[in-house]
Figure 1 (tube, rainbow, N blue to C red):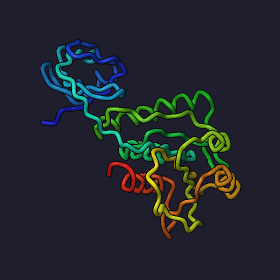
Figure 2: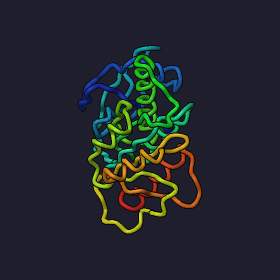
Figure 3: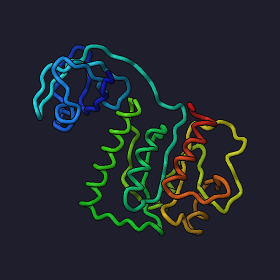
Length: 241
């Protein structure tokens, strides 16, 4: 029987009994239909996980007792930041979910010249909460015990000027430069445009700030495909694939 993994924001201590938040409590009771005495895995995104047993179960309230601590570390040794232009519809959700599964360390959404997504403050708050929940669900599924950080969307010019990664890559399908032979970096920034890509000025600005142009082959990849290919290649070359 599969043991569900549940995220909580609370501090976790071996032997403690804690009351879970309403959202995971409802998920345990209504979706998973678990019962008192069932076992689950609990983590709080700070590293490590706990085997726990359900000690009390109601529709909106679940108590669990932490029985054993496990220091499983499933994080890549490669620190990868995905900085990507905001996309329409469900593309951004897909990118965030799959990037989390692929071991990204940080995600920074960007407003670019060709971004068609405009977020007012109240809508931005909802989007950030929505994206954070996607990250949590992806970590529950892929067994990561640390949550990648999610930055508030920022202007691409601001991001380019502040990026401090050791290896900075900007996807540019008209370039002929691949990843090639490089010394293994400890940190990478992947700069990728929205639908329609980055414009020439944005690419030029990135290159003048130390970003290296990168092509992923002769075919033009969609904005939701390119980051997954780039992340996979980086993990294969320098990470834990």
